[in-house]
Length: 592
Ligand SMILES: Cc1cc2nc3c(=O)[nH]c(=O)nc-3n(C[C@H](O)[C@H](O)[C@H](O)COP(=O)(O)OP(=O)(O)OC[C@H]3O[C@@H](n4cnc5c(N)ncnc54)[C@H](O)[C@@H]3O)c2cc1C
Image 1 (cartoon, rainbow, N blue to C red):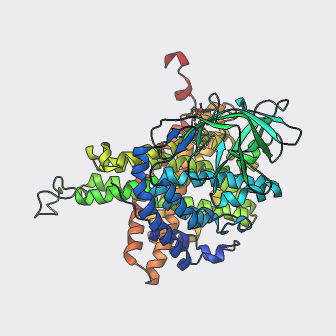
Image 2 (image 1 turned 90 degrees about the vertical axis):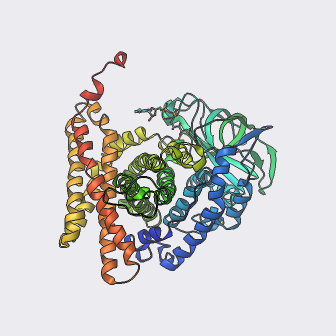
Image 3 (image 1 turned 180 degrees about the horizontal axis):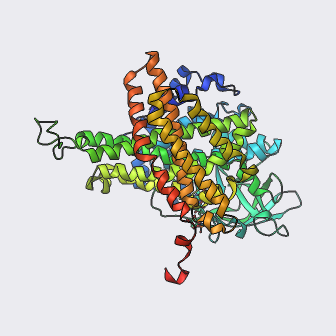
């Protein structure tokens, strides 16, 4: 079975050498000293490696079972969940007023990678709870917060997000679930939601569903959607659990991966619910926590890639096949290990260079979220809003690709279930779909985010890249290997943006036909920027003579690989974008 080792050193490098977390002027960041974050990550790493990772295959094999209307989770999940609760891991970045530890999202994201990499299906139960917690925290009344949040922070009660219905996923304006106002101010919710992650299970006393529904008589379409708190069990004003609400599980979905997470059809039959935020402003309430939720899914994508990569490296060093073309490297053995072969090394370096760049991008995203929330920094808010679809779409697409590449290192042994590599692929696949399918992320990026506030945020991004290049041009090694490739890739991104500006108004299809390529082009430039910044940090660390020199040298070599072998993909994406609408739109629907 696969193993999992928390990549603490690499996370520490990003937190401290790259982001210089404890020196940042953001409330709460002064606590993020290197010793402190190392201790937290080491502890979280032990749970990830020793408790969650061994349950990953168990969850995959057993799945969840619906028995007498209640979902039973796989063996061991309940005990592990209890350990997570007791250790305070569910409360790490929650508000201390409700029992949380008040840590920045940056640390929550770093720790989340470890749990998610070890066991994505399991970690989703608390991830969904965190999403529901954030929505109530942002939009609930004081009474609602006092009633629901403490138990959700501790995960005594878990949470869900109910958007999807059988006939509407992306286009939520088609929603049919209804909410009818009662005399006491509560609502009766009726309708069916599908694909609800963690919709029911046996690990918590209550499940707090956040449900989107329409109040009859409200505006048509998406403008008439409101958000409601609908608990599985009703709760009185003292916080005691009472009668069962009109919420039931219709069925559990059979699915490709994340078997350990219960994906439920939820039936609401005149269930009692409470308006969260304002009437008809449900989407606004949902979108408040969307950046955070999408960053969480981006993290899942890269975390699966990391877990798969770790095992592929072990296998490539162990498995003896063929001889190195330049002469035997294991002359006493019957053959050389796979890792001597250039194509296997290419494969592993694709993974390694993506993962480390993606980790830096993800943690930079978490830092921007903190800067916008904790420091009220409007620039950071604009930038993370622009980058969120890139993080979600690019990291999950590439994350899946990398799990497939890791599987490939195993040859046929990657395809059979015995080695556990297929689970990484199957689990990673959902990250491209939920929390807004990736095609829709690209649409959001090109259709909305690029032009938001007159294009101010994308201009801010270009300034940031330009500023970094200018500031460091004096360093010849950095210039040749990192800054010049970054400059060239950034020019490709600008040219793509220019193409949309010149052609998108005349023919919106010219922009939308290139939106997916634009999302990937942008993702590559972001990783290029991360690698250039990490190269600078590694060079400085080497010059200081402190720390592990081989770590920094490896970092530089991995970065050079990304710049030389991955970043040139921007040229291909630009060529596709500039081919415009015709190649995509010319075929009539009947011709497909
Ligand atoms: C395992 C699992 C767990 C899930 N968990 C949850 C959950 O907890 N809560 C919840 O509410 N939902 C959940 N979902 C639902 C998920 O978020 C939706 O499946 C997703 O949003 C897509 O909706 P859909 O399936 O209806 O696809 P559709 O909206 O029908 O889209 C189908 C395809 O068309 C594309 N598309 C749609 N509209 C456009 C457009 N205008 N332009 C270009 N392309 C477009 C999409 O990108 C997609 O590829 C889950 C789904 C799964 C499978």
